[in-house]
Amino acid sequence: MTKEAVKPQTRFSGVLLHPTSLPAPYGIGDLGTKAFAFVDFLASAGQQYWQVMPLGPTGYGDSPYQCFSAFAGNPFLISLEALAKDGLLDPRELAASPVFPADRVDYGPVIEFHLAMLRSAFDTFRTKATAAQRAAHERFVAAQAGWLNDFSLFMAAKELNCYRMWSDWSTGKHAHDVPQSAEMDMHAAFHRFVQFVFFSQWFALRSYANKKNVKIIGDMPIFVAYDSADVWAHPELFHLDEKGQMTSVAGVPPDYFSKTGQLWGNPLYNWDVCAKEEFAWWISRFRWLFEVVDEVRIDHFRGFAACWSVPAGSKTAEKGKWIAAPGKELFTAVRTALGSLPLIAEDLGVITPEVEQLRDSFGFPGMKILQFAFDGKASNPFLPHNHRRTCVVYSGSHDNDTAKGWYRTAGDKMRDQVRRYLGRDGSDIAWDLIRAALASTARYAIVPLQDILDLDSEARMNFPGKPEGNWQWRFKEGMLTDFTAARLKDLATLYGRVPEPAEEEKAEKTGKKK
Image 1: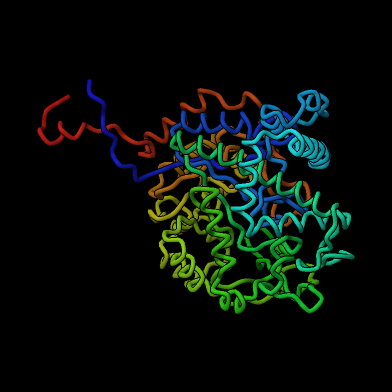
Image 2 (image 1 turned 135 degrees about the vertical axis):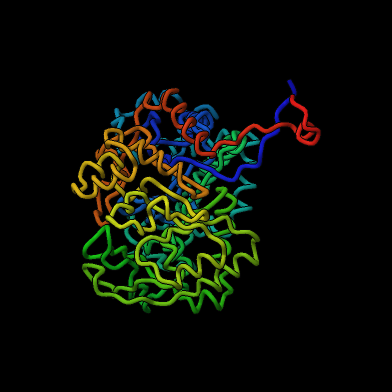
């Protein structure tokens, strides 16, 4: 039998899972063996995408959407086992690890232990690194100097100022005012090393995924945290007063998620300065992100048309105003500099014709969440029969309850519509929604792993508006089974999201059978 050709694929599916949720051994998911095993699961399940949340170093509330840098990686995703394998950690140090919960991330103890291990690895690297390790480190530091130097100095100064917010520091409030000292240099060198290790491990994982025909969808929050290297090093790009304090903050008005809106507290961009600098910072940000992942979901895409501006010091996001943003000019500049833009627009919430025009003029697919579909109206744009082909359908996102929890707490009218629309009795609701997502006309379908595992509300990742207790969920070893992979692949195949074998070219031309 001759080898079959494969028809070009036009429909795709994937799974949403942040790496922190993997069942790694030291209290938090990491980029080690379990991440590679998850890629194997995706490949065996016929999935072409792994969607993650922002990979940056988390700050307040442990949120991946509030990071110390828009460029850096999260140190606590580094595989400690891989460091031991590379000779940078003594396995006996790992053997002394505390006992961590298997089903959630207890961030305080996790951070303390991982920082101790990373500092030990850094000490070993300084004295015993191989020539190859040193050369690779030097190449990374030189190549990423544009953001890495600012970030490493920011984190070093933050440590020497007892981790206070940069606006409260006694020294080094501005990037050009950082006092030089041997102690400062050592702290900065540590953070350069940590970033080198993170991206070495990340790029190895991404390369493995790509070889398995799995692409990574990353996530770019439109806003950056106030307490970040980005704002500290580039205050001119943001609306700050002469003392470096925010004059207004970002959020969204009251919506599905919150009756008082969501007060994010991020600084708003000074778009006039960004434009005057020809969006150089933005171009650098996109350029690096496209090196880190294959495609990018832009969180709060509507902010590129207009941002909800709330006066600094407000308790809620109810009283604010929309401020226009130069999205067309920005994306034109980025496309001119970088070429094609493999972006997904998170276009949920208050969407205006201007937002839709901006999205469509650049050909960005939008998002459809099935949990938003059942309001009793057949015209609801989130219902599968109303989906556009150029969109990405989700059963739910990281901000939603799990499908099982959502259905359990929905009202009787909504549950009745769900059952009638899906033609199911609701006893297997998570997989009913997975089926609906994969059957949609949308070109892309992404499903949270919690729904694939049929988990209830205890597996929810985030509660918008709740400042603490989020981003903790982890799945346990053994939850991913061959049966689950086969079930997912069967549905993906049934709805044309797995490449179909085709007759080889010669047979097609001659009309002969193989």
